[in-house]
Image 1 (tube, rainbow, N blue to C red):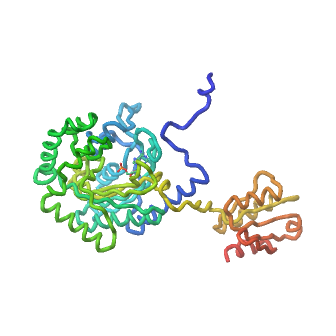
Image 2 (cartoon, rainbow, N blue to C red; image 1 turned 180 degrees about the horizontal axis):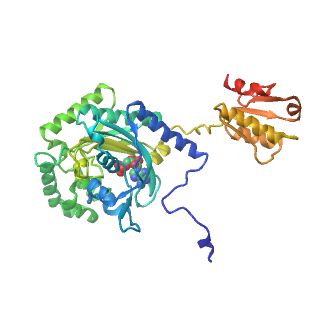
Image 3 (cartoon, rainbow, N blue to C red; image 1 turned 90 degrees about the vertical axis):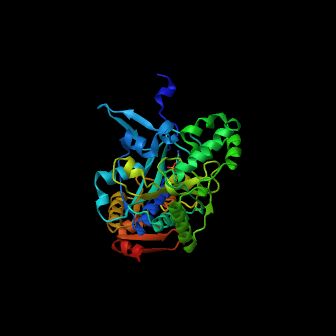
Length: 420
Ligand code: AMP
């Protein structure tokens, strides 16, 4: 067997999250669910794969994600399944399946988990990546839009990212609103097709809004002159957007109006937004979201307005100013050498753990010096030392690794001393 066939590597575009980085990664996910929970968003988990139709009908067949990026497979029962590329369509599917919309509204749900898209990998863009997100279902009140955006801003702030908020409204699909605008946009683009990059020309008919997302210089130049949606909103959508802005102004959330902001997934209506962060190069969006008032109906349900966002954990960590390693969770490292030390150390570490403290010990028979080194790299505040002297006298030397102060105390007082 050739050498390369014997050594395995993770699939292209995926990451192993390893210590010490895994601490920051996990604490960011926890922080998200904590911040969301404090605003009334309850945790929800859905399967990592769904029937392919959930995304085809939910996210939309003309979107890049569904058309080009899904990991779709046929299982042994002949069903077409897809690893979820995003979290909103699955959450709405679950709500409808379990009729949660019959209960008190709005439903406020939060999730954290891996998503899968077969994109060309680069810094900040992976094939398995992690999102945290919230969804508020069952209300079209602008207060919900403002709340969702504020929750996102606050979490990102607590996670060490100071985002720029781009805000837009893309109206609703009827001819009186976005439908009419799309006709205007299409006519404009048809006149200018020859000036656009070749790859973007096909979109003029299939998904004209997406031409705003093009990174091709020729297309970008054309789009600068294109008519914008905000000049064509119906009066209801315009008023709704006005209220969202007033509410955000009222709580001091600043934003940049970006009438060319269109989001990649087809289900969006009305308010759309994106959070941008510096230091990420071309993948500068840490998250985004918007209203999706028609999604429940696309999935076969009754009308159920909704709004939410998804934030990319991988990018939050890349953008975070808070580079400090999160705590490892170990408060006390037990250092023990000498006759009978291993058993005593194990008893002490168990006492500490049973008292709810984080505790660890040497399991490799290191020297005293080696164990002290382990103690300091463990991130523990305290070393509990069991040397020959302590073993003989039933005591422990408790060393504060920050100040280097130490004192000897009876073994049954260690837990109390650490907790004090
Ligand atoms: P979207 O679901 O496309 O609106 O993406 C929301 C956020 O998820 C983005 O702003 C990114 O932070 C993150 N994200 C989306 N796709 C990827 C990817 N392929 N790799 C890493 N993060 C991603």
